[in-house]
Amino acid sequence: MAIQPIDLQTLFTQVDKVGRAQIAQKEGLSIQQTIQGIQLERKNEQYIQSVNEAQNTGDGVENIKDRREREQAAADGEKKRQEEDEQEQEGKKNSVIKDPSLGKNIDISM
Image (cartoon, rainbow, N blue to C red; front, side, top):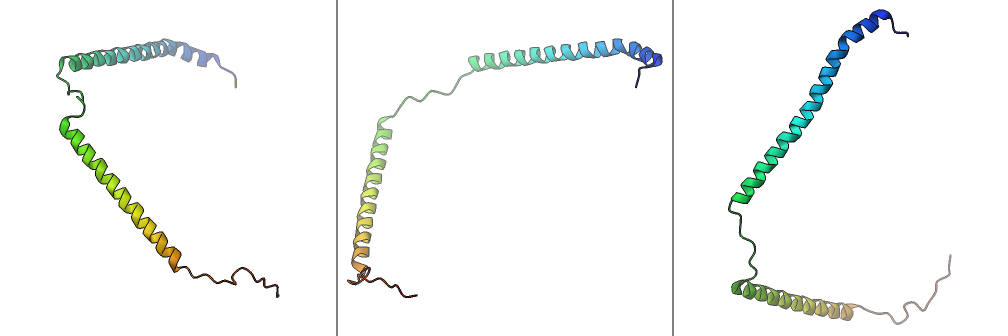
């Protein structure tokens, strides 16, 4: 499909419009970047000038006591759990009935 002279005339008249559209598009991108930069600067300025939440000052005396109590309670719970598991295992060992001839005889009948 060849380009006809009439098509070229139409294209040449539209070239300036295409160029303007591309320039506007490039300028739009740079304007958006500038606006975003200004907004970021304002946000940073506002953050610097505002009163911020205090940093963590560490554990106080009451926090240390609470933590020790929780750790002790967890350790006691773990000991109870281990004792219950041991009692349960002993109960299982005693409840198993063993047959003295079990595993000594081989059945080869078919």
